[in-house]
Amino acid sequence: MSYDFYVAADAGGLSLGGLDAHARVQALKPKRGDTAARASYEQLFETDGQQASSYDKAISATSELLRNVGLVLPTPPDLDRLTRYSFFFQFQFTLESPYISRDDDAFHIMDNPVRKDKVFQVPTVSAASWKGNLRWTAMKTDLEPVRDNPEQFARRRLRHTLLFGTEKGFETSRDWERFLDHRCATEADHAERCRDEACRKVHDSYRSLLRQEFRRSGGQALPHLAGSLHFYPTFFDKIGLEVINPHDRRTRAGRQPIFFECAPVTAKGTFSLLYVPLGQVTRVEALQDLATVEKAVSEMMLTYGFSAKKSSGFGTAMVKAGKLVLPGSPEQRFKTFTGLQDLVRLARQGQGTAEDS
Image (tube, rainbow, N blue to C red; front, side, top):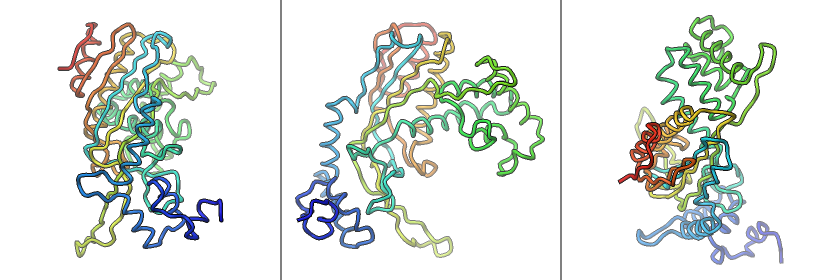
């Protein structure tokens, strides 16, 4: 008798029928490429249309455990103990299109497993993924409209740095920094040969504002920061398979179907975000940050998506119920993104509370 899980499974000394879905997937991992193992894996997703699949039942049971320990709906912190003008908002959402991502675990029977939590093995969106997707969406909604105005562009770019943290490629003229510094061309070597006056203005204005913000002279290095926005991971309550079938451009016939694990349409999750400003900010600045974030979140959920292959329409969602927590105010509820926008607008106008009808 072997006490090694994978050895026992491979030797046939382990009955897959007696395992739950999570354990069965683990047992099948060493058999990548085996047709029978692949068929056994796909059986986990089978349903008669009325009952949930075996895999969904396992995910649902684990989701209930996550809910009981407070990971599905994180509790808002005590804002009075945080920096002045901190805020927290949270909403539950339902996927309108499948969510796909790349799992960190390369040892899997599938070529394209969805990312799962290391411990609970449920489909998840990490805090870092939320941050990256929201920053990209905020760039589209808040920075691109003013790209022809270098000074306003630099001011908004500074606010984004304070919200999301240091740009990728900072002070290396690579990645995100190069993209924002050089909007006049897209060639990879453009930054090294750029002589465009508008690019120079964007570059110089932004760094001048950074030095003013952090009180750095010309010879001092600029700091690296994490930003004011703190994200929570999301756990989905369902798992499914999605098929993409690339077509030959000449024959217009499908060549080889590609299977992706996904969080399917109707899967539910929760988005939670905490804002703790860096240093001293005014109420006007904090509420402007709230408006910027609210707009980016709604566009990310409804239009751009937050999934891999989002340009093909993956990873959009509809809000179901949410709450906004501002310091010194009672918890305010909303049911749609329009309701959240109304709450933000009333807060900026200095009014009290509002209920989304």
